[in-house]
Length: 115
Length: 112
Image 1 (cartoon, chains in turn purple, yellow):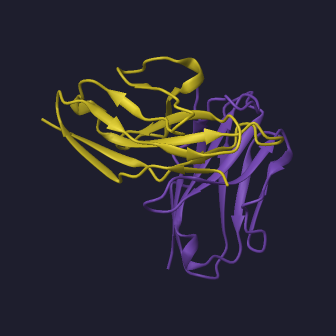
Image 2: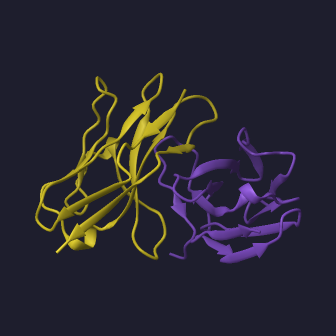
């Protein structure tokens, strides 16, 4: 099966600029996640969608981060304006449902460097 | 507070030696525990989950609720086991299905 697709693979921007990441989950997967992974740390959940609705965005810095999944399929994550501490790998993942035992399938990630 | 702790950043062993990657968790309730692995230049992927009680690539993990631990073990390490390993938990609370909380990760290096 085709995996979770993410683009771009790498992005370098200056602080205060804007950036957007795109994710296309595995076909048929209802749940989509965006994780932030800072170097040397484990992934941290930013936002979780069930179809096109937000399930959990408690750790999303809403003053600068936004995400949408308008048609319940692909999703975009935006940062505006970016800060130095936003440098990280942004991982998108999807799962068939929202159960506690669901296997998550991860994309390759977008590596963001904010200078 | 929900938390996953992996005390070792790096674990280095020789081929054929036993391996134990430690994982401790903090959660008020009965979480689901997982081990995810990331091989060099590959995506993060599920290795095993405690509810399946399975052995994958020779690895096993037992949930010890008394010690709140979920250590990953393999009796004889292979060079191809070299990777980054993440312990993760998922809660049963409302709206937390599928929400994984990850540990910091342990890099396993298996030397020939």
